[in-house]
Image (cartoon, rainbow, N blue to C red; front, side):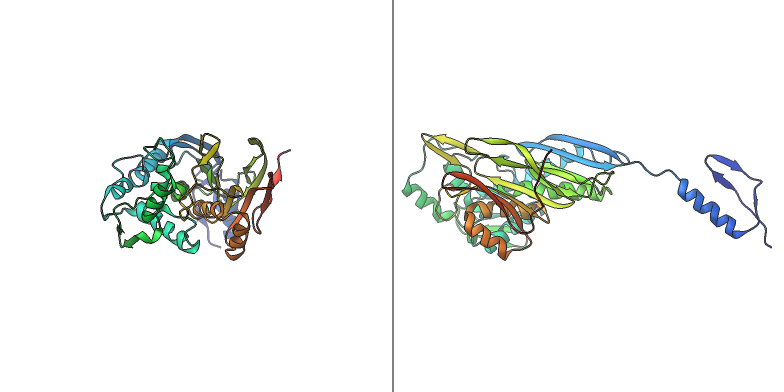
Length: 351
């Protein structure tokens, strides 16, 4: 029988004189050691801050603080330098002020390329070239004091349309100097994707990221409870306190609504969502569209598509694109109603 002398560590005890006379005993010791070895305890970390004209709330579970507010703020600053129309030095501002176009960075290209894909598949229901319309209807960086008339809208429409844009490697070209873009309808969804990537690069597997109401989720809480995402409802009068929720373990949930951002002009309630084909703000039966998709940039782009299409066309669109699902709030004969497409997470009520 072979006799081996080993160093034995167990629960803080160290003894150089223990002799193991059987390999099976050694295996048992190793198994016991593994079973009783303390595991890294997952702690909850909450990050909050401001960025992109709104606020962010991030919740993740990890053994230590692997991502901080400083890192998130630095990421948001980089994105602003690329995509914010409110920063005069940003790449998107440089493009809007150019005659022919600009060279793009990684973020700019990723967002514009995905926007163009969504424009093509939706036949232009989503279009980032609406910035001149956004501006003339009072929602741009500099706002018009008076509402546009039909002839002004007709003139602006000459510069509207995703086909005015061409991507050549990292150069974004426009065929008319008056073509200007606004990616606010998709940028926050893209941003929550980037934050999720940062968390996952640090080994974080359970998190919820929210920026301006756009959400990205992965995993569960340590007690195996799912993350709950509140569903906003709207009545004939105003917002209703959140009483419903869905549970999601992976993917993104974003919402677009005509009640979120608007201004009053006389008896007209002008919302910030533009129809790129008519040149006017949306005036259909849709109130809001909440989309569930694999990532934020997809959900955020398509919630705008569904708002633009109106209820019936939106439902047809969802049947054709089964990787998307949505919760739609709309009006019918003056009454607010809602419906879900196939595949949308089960809506539950808070007790």
